Image 1 (cartoon, rainbow, N blue to C red):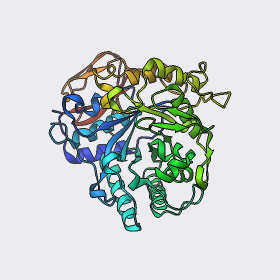
Image 2: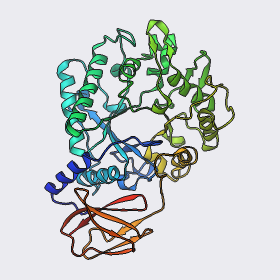
Image 3: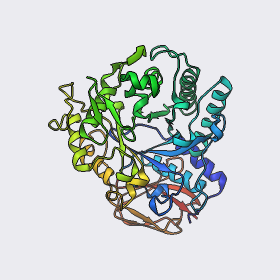
Image 4: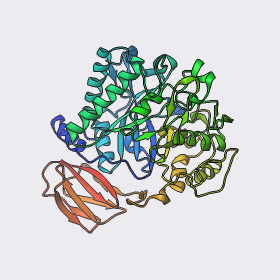
Length: 436
């Protein structure tokens, strides 16, 4: 059980961490973290237990209670000593390390439809409160189910269905509020299912499966959207740009469906034209292991497909990329879910994170590459001395960011520190430490 500090100090700590500059990493590994437990088959993880290679973390999920978007709630798993206060401190730790932490909205059982202005206003107020309470970088939109997503009027360029126009308005309001409040951009990601994006290519899907219904939101918010992570799983078959069919779980499915959203297309049934997105806004989204969802593809087959898309490998699968230069700016990977990736009996432990490390980490040029060497700092909370195992050079700052002491030894005297929260920075890692 962690030491939980005085609630007033916790509030100051979260306010401080909200003012840490948010910047999307040069390459991303996005993962969804569960706020529930599924027992032995998928155990609960504390946020601090997540593999360090995950640099964008989506908390799953803020749900609309009873389908009411003016009653958004995020409830922690209650049968554990790990509680809200622990989670908030761990979020602050992740953000201090330069990672992005988002609140994912909706999911399979908590999605909703903004039916009127009152519901939109309630949704905006609740999301502001959750962002402030947990000290977050922004939100991820994961609306699912036809009843919540389907649009019945308008086009991609001219949406008129009220739940679409109100969602656009709500997100714009949140973006403006965050920038005004914190002096930086709110991170915004989306993780729609294939039917609601690439499904716009198919007359059948447009007419029967709400094909393309996410496209107006993506199109209008293109400049504000940081990542689009279309779920290339639980999908079935989809068209490529030439209207040839590809099946999930194959190399051709991954390459073709990724190019569709980068290249853009004219939708079926007069829905309009989707302009496409920069490859730098795309994270390829796949299941972490065989039991995480249909569409799983082994690392041995996935890595050549990714390298082909990036322009670092030969053609694989049954799809030929149209852009001869390929897409070297492709941002990275997303998976459902971190909890699945951590399992030792589903594939191998963190095999998806290893794919990211093998393919994308060598492409990082503008920032320090991920250091996954274990650095341990103890005791924590501390009294007179701190031991740094795995590193011996760094600095300790107070909660305001002011340097208190620098050190070049693995045992540091801290007996003169006042009680409170500090940050110890060493080996490209940031550790939150508490003086009792």
